Amino acid sequence: MLSRCVDSISFKTAVDASKVDWSFTYTRPLPSSLPQSSDIKPGSPPWNGSHSRRHHPVPKDWWAEDICDLDVDLYWRVMVSIKAKGAPPDQVGEALRLYALRWLPGVSKEQTTHDSARKLNGALAGDFVETSTKHRALLESLVSLLPPEKGSCSCSFLLKLLKSATILNASQASKMELAHRIGLQLEEASVHDLMIPSLSYANDSLYDVDLVQLILEHYLMQETSPPTSPVRSRRVPFEHRRTRSAEQLDVVDSRRSTAATHGSKLRVAKLIDGYLAEIARDPNLPLVKFVQIAESIPDFARPIHDGLYRAIDMYLKVTLKPLFQVCNFVFSCSHRILSPTLLLWSCHFHDDFNLWNSSSCIRGGACMIKDGR
Image (cartoon, rainbow, N blue to C red):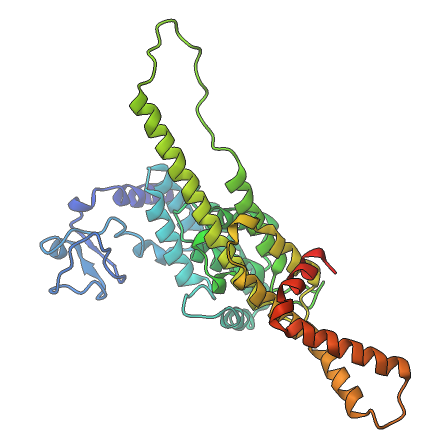
């Protein structure tokens, strides 16, 4: 009986949208591809399909909100059946996003990283083990349902899932799968999306820099890997030679692909420089991790280094501030009897710090950071 219900639901979702004549719930803004109507407000559920068809076409993902009421196990079976019937990847991705917004704490786009963590912790406070296990299983089920096609889910949504996976301590396989998918479309991310909280007891860093480094590696690997091409069949005796116009089209397509790849790297470089400027505010950020992420970006992707210099300047101010305060304390106590070694060290460091902050030595500081000194 349950299998028949699942098949019935998936069969209905495969019906052409123009033939939908039953009621359904649709509280989202209408897609821009559909004509808008002032007579019907799509934000007023339930949307009566037979009535709305007289004003504008029914959205193709009309079914996505109604199946959100299902339990996660039944939802998983329904989505597997829907995917097997050939549902478009973007519709599947939208359905998964709506289900996550409904049942997974901390995925709402209005919340900041710390708000998401606070909401998750509040949701888990009642019965930590049972509730965290439930949400972890839900998240891992959603990850297993993600369509393989690039762009079926937004990069922002995937990063929200990764943040939740970190907070819920989801399986390593789920985290790696999300990191790989995010790497495929990293150019769509924002700095705010990359601020993944670190809950590791191994370090005191505020953000999970290792996870972002892994995402960046996945991005660089797929950008540097050669494009796959079909295996060429054995040459037949009377094969016609390709026309010059066809060869010119191939050249144009190749140049467009190269330009798109170059533009993608420029956007990712700007994104990473902005991310470095944010994590540089963390006083517990190790220098080696800062350098590794900064050096991961190819040189040609940084025609202008202003973003990197800004990040280095922020890192130095946060890292060297305690030492600078010690120097000021030493100078304020210079009338007392101090160790000559301490006084000489303070003078030397004070002069170096002033030189470091001067505009003429910013590039020199960048080189020192890059060399790991």
